[in-house]
Length: 117
Image 1 (tube, helix red, strand yellow):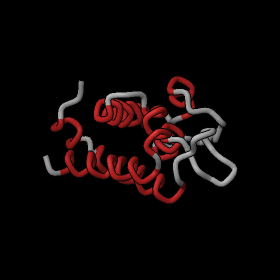
Image 2 (spheres, rainbow, N blue to C red):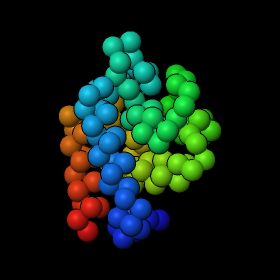
Image 3 (spheres, rainbow, N blue to C red):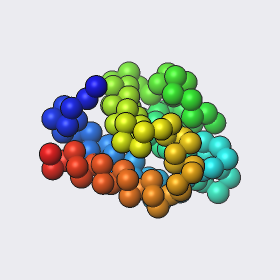
Image 4 (spheres, one colour):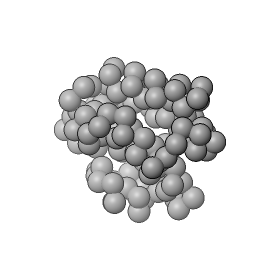
């Protein structure tokens, strides 16, 4: 369980802002981790922000952790956890259900809450 102080101390709010920017530019994919038009899934976008080198067509948590440089795995997990705790459901299902605008808004709000705590 992460506290706001822990999240602020690790500057996770910066990663969340970068993720919101990426999602805002790309859009949320509802069919695949990476759609033909360039939209991405939330987990896929998070993995990109955390330095994923290969771009596999997968948004499975365990698989993505193996694709991220070891030094960024803890940041990936913290971001995933904090988003999932905030929305209280699976981040893939939630993001596909609510769409790009709501995802970006929620992530920016969460980032701001952490930054100003």
